[in-house]
Length: 307
Length: 313
Image 1 (cartoon, rainbow over the protein chains, first blue to last red):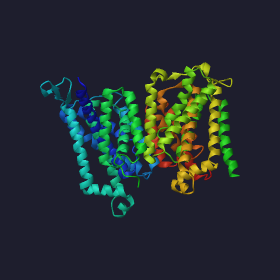
Image 2: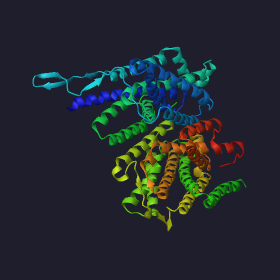
Image 3: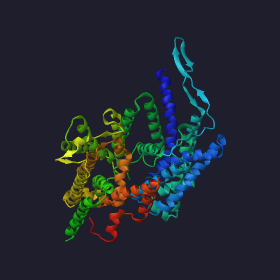
Image 4: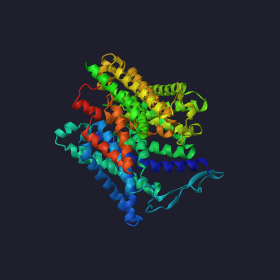
């Protein structure tokens, strides 16, 4: 294969990563933006989504309906767990930044160990509901002008396209929720100034619980979507957490648009880098580059300067 | 008077640890030596986090810099234990200077992430140079090289005493430093950066000093770990090892001299004891962390200070 088709594959693979990353990071960004809480356990909700997807779909005997049920149930369960954690722990430590970090590290250990004890150390796949291989055309300039060819290996599966579409739809829905509805208005008011919002009769405590649950549900949804591509494993939360941290910071804290752009940037560069270069060296360079972006633009790509 | 009691408390801790050397059974003896080295790491972390108020998630790179700064020249250049320890310190100090110069341009969460990413890059570099560092497998430091001033550091007694010496040096060093003008300025920066700046202190230089000092002490702990336990591995540079000192310090009490030791001791034995009882030791650790944040918000030493003894340094 030539360079062009190779690049195209890298971009497509990167786009799948970016879609999942954008979902997960938007949950983290929402929680940080509204509650000013750095949720270290966020990666474990992603893992929980993936593990629950396996549990639900295998309980229903696999197949397309099992996957659909997982798509609905896993985020709900993860969200409910997160709401419970918020009410029992985070609320009681008063969302103090340092204490929430310790508390969420504790939560991380608990969730990870619970997954290990119930689900086990194996990595398990879930069959995608549909997985047609779609060959893609490529333009080639022959002696008699440009023409379409179908290089072998240049393809994507219908499931991967579905992941991108689903992520885009959910993110659009989230944007509509934040910008167009009363719920979004309440969340934005709480984000801007919790005390004043409280004075205007907004139940800030319930908003916080809801936002924490919504953030966890988004991570779990990302986890469900990735399982048919990447198998569920109880340790999968760590790297996902690091990547979404990076995305959120690069994008600018609390900015949904910035988060999506940063997810595309990181996902695509990850895809391209791992197809063309030595993975470790490329990762080092990418990591340093991202760190330097932050050093010279601390507020992130789309963030406003600190208030 | 107050000063006397404080010195007494810390001298008492060191004396207790020294006395324990003669009574502890072999297993605990080794454990406490390890805890003292790790507590030195936590004290180094505390200089930056507890006293200056900068939350770094990248201290594993300083720990690893000390460790590999010691292990590499020992393995490939045949350097003796003393010079190798110094080269470990130098490596950590240089790295801290470079990272500090860049990372201190950011504040808050961005500082946390930038340090985390530099640390990830450092860890990946160790893996990339696997031909020399042997990656996750790690290098074993030959026993013949682990002799300092005629003491064979691989023997339990010498190891314990060397760990105690390092631990007490850093303990009293921190205690002394925080009563010096420099330490006072660091605390002032933690409490109110803007006001400290108004008073005419050069914030950036003080913070940089804190990063270098904290990184060097962490590097000393890393080098000592390599020297005393004869092993350097890439797992010591992973994110986990950046989170540990944060946990130890928060559990023990940030901004207290004795807190990092209490936190390290507590976590170490919590995991050690619960992993003896059940395979679900992470669950126990997780529940303990959550309970401690709920009921001892300022850490163990912080709670003692809040409830019984306000003057605890």
